[in-house]
Length: 486
Image (cartoon, rainbow, N blue to C red; front, side, top):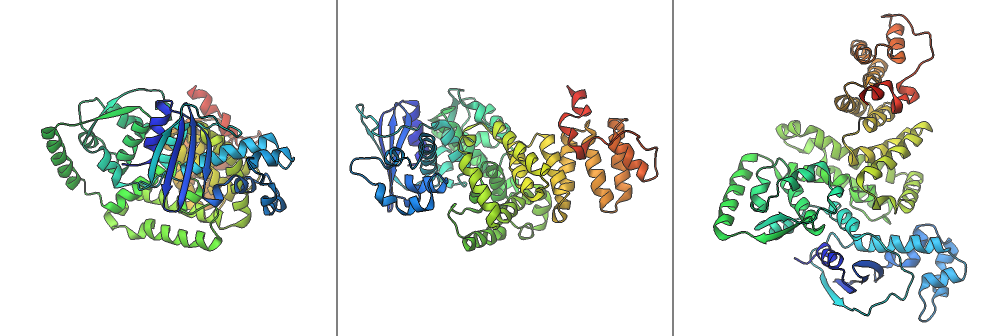
């Protein structure tokens, strides 16, 4: 198998110095490394060139971009020329180089049919401004945003994985760590898969991620053992009853947490409005809940809904010119954010969502909070704020109910989820359901002001004389319930 992640694994962990040449059709890219660190790239893809990157990041004006040819000098890097002439600052150049390195590398991850060769050069030195990125983070992000590919199974199916170094295990999700824990160095990959409930595509991509992060290595399984494992795998797959369509949904759901909205719709960041619309309808046809067989749709309803909601949210934002511009700016300034682990990224998205919620920009808040909960599905606070934002949008009320229930399931001791759900039910005229939720909130916290006030307004108890506190003043971020848990 010829894939960029395998080359990056070899170069990074063996601290190699030289040039990696990538060729696929008319596309040619040259990646320069010093002791395993990527420091420079040259590319024939127009939108990946430094001048285009600077313009995309809004570091140069439209006029400077149009006159880019005037800044080309013999034997001079264009970034250095722009800086020396005062068109950009040192920081602008550093940010653009980092972005260029990252995007140029990530853009080759989907392909397995390129020609890739590494030319060792011990005397190699960079002639341009150095901007370094983390190869393990590039490997992790690149593999996560790849679509499932049968080539990965073909590469790993007859291998016995065994544990190696643990340096980058902190990058893994809970589900991935569950797979890693099953690796003993004895069982072949296909046998390990049968002990798990993970979708096959997710398993093979996870195992490939482990291998490329050097968490595991692999060895060939012996003939008889291979035949037995293959037979067991075939029998097990017949017994699961999982259709290819459902497998695709589950794999997409696992991958969507690491995708931005362009990647969710599978379009370039330069896509036109018409291209975005076309991509949305194509994705909607693939993942619309109505296209699944009734029994399967019922069994995997939540997963299907999550995927379709993610696609819809991506389209709603990218089809709005102003919101798309703001989002693109966020991507540009978020280059360093994406180099952090998923916990930190989720917290950033949550805080951005909270800021937008406080500004009554509920539509925008939902977009950021959706990304936060995809990165961290174990945070009740994230689901709670998401549900609150959704409850302000008529078309999202059904999903708001679902997310309030999710917050409650994660923190049954916290009254804020019950109160939020109660307010939602009351607003929709479901009085009995609302009363039940407010009473549950008082079971968790008998002095909860908002719950007592709501019941009093419904003629079911004395009013609380003090000012209202709780959910809709956002006190849930430091609520009494949380203090009790501590």
